[in-house]
Image 1 (spheres, rainbow, N blue to C red):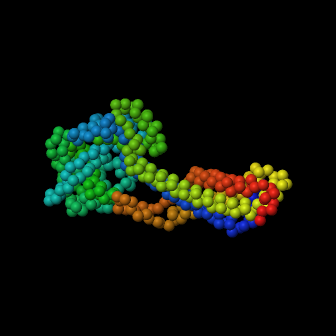
Image 2 (image 1 turned 45 degrees about the vertical axis):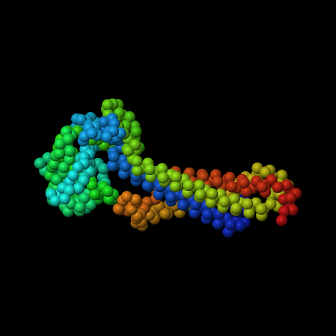
Image 3 (image 1 turned 120 degrees about the vertical axis):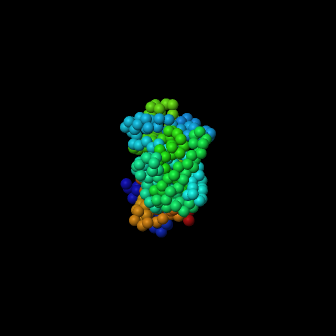
Amino acid sequence: MRRVKIAILNLLRNRRRSLLTVAIVSIVVTALMVSGGFGLFTYQSLKENAARSEGHLVLTQPGYFSADEDFPLQYGLDNASELRKRLLLEDKVKAVQPRVYLQGLISNGEKSSIFLGQGILSSEFRVKGPFLNLTEGRILSGREEISEPEIMLGKDLARNLNVQPGDYITLMSSTVSGALNAMDFKVSGVFGTGVPDMDKRQVYISVKSAQFLLDSERVSTMAIYGYELDLSEILQEKLSALVPDLQITTWEERAFFYRGVKNLYDRIFGLMGVIMALVIFVSLFNTLTMSVTERTREIGTLSALGASKAELISGFILEALVLAVVGAVMGIILAGLVSAGLMVFDVTMPPPPGKTTGYPLTVYFSIHLAWMISVAVAAICVFSSFLAARKGINKPITEALVYV
């Protein structure tokens, strides 16, 4: 404790220089904490969106994602109802959502356009949460009767066809046998996804309507939702033993956008961290070099009185650690204030590439990240102080005593 007190007193010899160094360290720590917190928020948001969209696990026929289908549902799943019941018996499975993917033409009687559709259960909206922005009408009802089929349209597709909830449109698609089938639907709602290309093409209908349109009892995939996203791999191993003839893929294997963004951000934040580390190193090295130069005669006197080089160097290292600790604590506090402030004040980020809607800016405050940054800053301070002090400590005693 006495050595810490001496280090603090030495730093207070030149308060302005010490405060400037602490300010630089705190600003760097704040910048790293805020940028890292934004990265963590981005990763978590993309992770949750990918898992919610695809499912924690995706059950398919082998080769479904790697091979091209010659006809619709060529690699579809048979006996979907029985298979779904078997999966729901597992205690770690929260929900199983069968999906039928189809495409074709959509027409209002006067104008036609290409559509990309999904046949889903009405429980899809409850399981996935608010993944769509409903602009008009309502979501699909729980009715699965083929006599009264309903459809939801992307907002740009609905505008292009000039339809609104209550109007009727026709879907046309090829069946599994290659014939052309058509079916009339009543528009129940209009939604927006925030992605223009999807809003121009996306439609949702019931699973039974999609199967009737394709003339097949199969489904394309089954999305499996567990209770905890982080346990997806454990659930995958368990279910793989239950259905060994089928393929189970985790959400991360299908989350191409998530992996791409994460790899990009890792490189950006990594480069930013290196630059910030160099800023701290140069600042501390300059501060401690000036301090060593000013105290050369003092170093010579202590050496003449019997102080070892290790004791002298450890003193400068301790001074650097004091600067690092004070600066890191101040930086962490500032980062916490920024994170809390963004929860109070609504700051909206502009729409990312490929989307039309912005999102609220959020910065996660991570204790783990704070520890990592603090340890890195301390290590840089120790290294810079060692380099700065080594030259002055190694000066001969006679030269140090007469140094001006």
